[in-house]
Length: 88
Image (cartoon, rainbow, N blue to C red; front, side):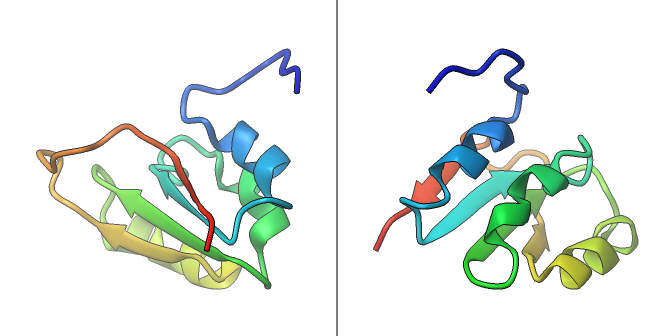
C-alpha cells in the first residue's frame, strides 16, 4: 500500500487494514481530529480509543456516538504512542 499523506497517529493506515483486523486500538483520535479515519470500523468492529489530554466531556460524547470505546488515561501511562490492530 502506498500512502501519500500519512498522519502522525497511524489512523490512516487503520482504514486500509480494516478488512484484516477484528478491532483497532488507537490513541488520541479525538485530540488530533483523526477519528473519522476509523469510520470503516463503525457499527461492526471494535474501536478502542485512549485519550490523555482531554476531559471526558470533550471526547466521550463523540466516542459514544461513533460506537467507540474511549477511555481517559494519565499522560504518564507506559506504552503510549503505538497503534495496534487486533486480529482474533
